[in-house]
Length: 306
Image (tube, rainbow, N blue to C red; front, side, top):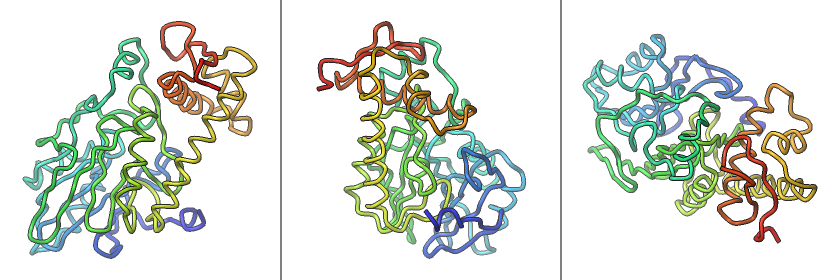
């Protein structure tokens, strides 16, 4: 975490990370850390990964990093959050490069999350880019390659239904699924903890040498970070099950009881996180909702909790 805490690169400057360049967008916040990382891959035909927010200065920084003998040939988007995808359409129009992603903002969402959305649950997280529409959709396992690079797309829902990670050699571009500076937000109905845990375990099997995430410094020990993320979620699950031993409770009541050192302003985000766990636990029959599943549902321990 020391390396992540020290992460503070100059905004708008293309920095060589060894095999890829990174440009930091000017959108720091509690949700985005120093800002969104945009990556440029290649020496002649360039792939841009996560163009970032709709920001003129960032667009100019990306275009300014393209040399006289270079062109942007592909634009890849990990997921349709406002800090990752809005600039993609503009960049595509400016360069003629197609925008590639898993799909629009509702693509990949589970039936459980669709039902939650229909019940009125929305919002939370970094904000959805509702108008995002790629020029070309990518399926899990699709490979895009040029004479210089070979990119494999992995569908990794969890943080967001249409989230993808992109594998290039020993590098894995993880968007917001895996970050070094913080644990990923999983906020229903767009975030799904059951999917998140499955995606993290899938990424473990890839054996990446380094992870380049949407925010923060490179993750130089991917295996350790994934182990920590999975253990962290399992620990939070145990906290919730212990708290429910005292009786039925809502996600907000549980968040207030569990996140005792969290500032009040962040309790709504913590509540979303707890709700994500409760939905996952309900799917495993470890908790039971006393009424129709919603943000205000009261939960009790289920028969599988033992």
